[in-house]
Length: 400
Image (cartoon, rainbow, N blue to C red; front, top):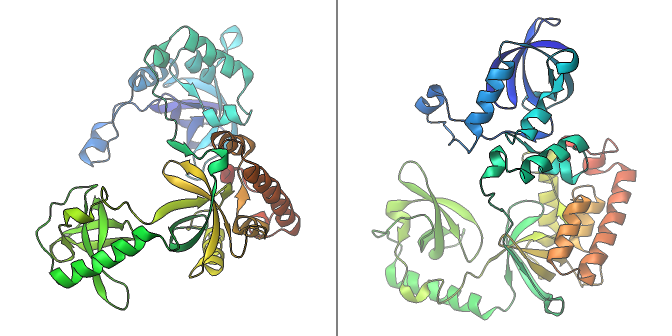
């Protein structure tokens, strides 16, 4: 399809006029990403400006000089949820005709989407062009790349733990906080905060409000109003702050003047670590709460886990979250991870995601068995058209 480039948003995103359809479209090049250019004055005035990234302006300038107000040829192969058409764009004619995405990558002005490489969906010529640009240190590759490896704490194979836990907060169908049953630290901090409440009453006091600082925050659990340890995570509007109650996992917005006060030094996290541990169900992916299947997953998880003593196999930590296989009876019974998957409310990750977890967690036998169990449960759900498998397969955008 012939089109004319009307505007360049960044190196790989354009506003096009399509004469044959007499319409304008927003078009983005498939498989690649260009860095963020400098914000325009309008974005700055609205307070929506994003900081420019290295070579963002260079890639935008190259696109403006090469394709702006010129006729191009496009091949559309997808559309994002935001209505942006994605595909390939060719410039020039005859012997000068070339794939503009490959030109950007070969010049070091764009990178190939790593997910496309992982899934084997990126064209080989595009990956080879990026490799050549890397070897020649062109453009983006002329500056040192910052690795964004997640923080990992893997238990040794013999250190995998099976403990009794209680869920203290549920964030989604696979994300939660838990407390270990009969944990001495939990008893100490619960008793200490009761004494703190009895001593100080429930009136707020001047407090140093800094993001990340641990203070005492007032909370009503439905029976009594008491002080609990809380970490300030965000300053909100109208004199409120958002806090995370570190010994339980729940988040609340509280009034700074009336619901905060300094915490005694003896109750700091350096003396008594946070009792609630953040966790996620190992290898089980769910949809967000904004979607019906995400809500259903959270409700099913709550029904199976809330208010009960559960068995938990702790595999290790990734990005501060403990990876858990959870059981509502004993470790020889089907896990909650498996039950959610069998109902089509969770699914196992892609192969490279599974291999990455197995590798980081030391290829434990228990995780290997979990992979096998989840695959069998997922196949049952797919054949029965349950949950997210209602149409037989998961839409491509859900695979991201």
